[in-house]
Amino acid sequence: MNQHNSHYKLSAAGILITIGIIFGDIGTSPLYVMSAIIGEKKISEMLILGALSCIFWTLTLQTTIKYVIITLRADNKGEGGFFSLYTLVRRYKKWLIVPAIIGGAALLADGIIAPPISVASAIEGLETYYKGVEIPTVPIVIGILIVLFTIQQFGTKFVGKAFGPVMFTWFAMLAIFGSIALFKNPEILKAINPLYAFKLLVKYPGGFWLLGGVFLCTTGAEALYSDLGHCGRPNIRISWIFVKTALLLNYFRQGAKLLTMEAQQIKIIDHTGGIEKTILELKQFFLLIPDWFLLLSVIIATAAAIVASQALISGSFTLINEAMRLGFWPKAKINYPSDIKGQLYIPSVNWALLI
Image 1 (cartoon, one colour):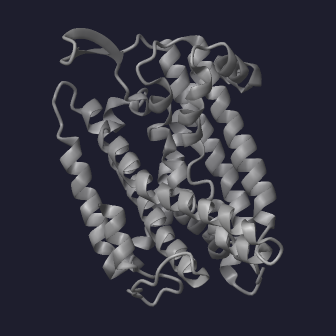
Image 2 (tube, one colour; image 1 turned 135 degrees about the vertical axis):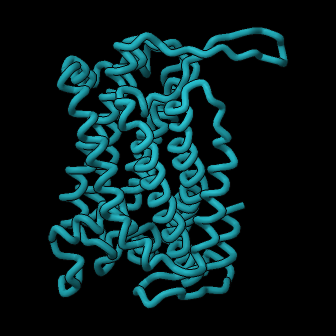
């Protein structure tokens, strides 16, 4: 690693930059993970404690041990990412091109699904704030995404300066409200016991398939590796301690609330069969947030979701640029909208992602 680049060295500024550009996707996961796991299932101790246990050990084994401790050591002259790793090993086996392309495709797919999911989950908080009022969340989300992709052609020089402070505010909010809930319900920490995860996967009906929802808690973890060259190993590892703590505190906050509250339920008419059924109202993230702070929390969540989306969009441009150099992607027009080193814009990719 080139230690002459100041942003590689451990510093407060480096940590703030790292929090802003790397942890957006994984950082906004609390907006939708518990909703994805629970769905329309009846709340039970086995479900909630099992889900929390799975989340804790996924973030520990998958993100912390695999990426932060092990994978960050496999750099290519200070650079990380699937294709950087591929250039190191391609001379040994030709078939290694297959996992490289699959890995790149998976990262690009993350850039497709994460912006609408995270922005929509944040905007849906308005339904919690304006109780009983039908909010047109879909047009709002579409409008935000159109604006976000449209401004890509002008670069993110000015917006980029806000990434660090926005994400730090977001994680601080997660940690503060999570700590308050944990202080009131410390017994929720028993979910750390992996036995609860085992029971969920083995004994809960269809429990194994809940891993699809659980895995959402680590989406964006590959950014820790792919953005290694932008931030440096020390800054990523130290900032992850803060980020993981904030995330876990918030997941435990949601779990504690779900176990102690009377399930909020709404009635939905199944027009296809004419059957009336009752499902849980899925707004777990905004539970336990005081009414006086609820609207502000929606604003902060939306800002964090936009930052996360921007990081994934920029990452997609970089990924396709690398793929073109390796011959994995057809040649496409590349623009350089600002004088920031490494910032580029690929119109065809931008509009494809938006669509």
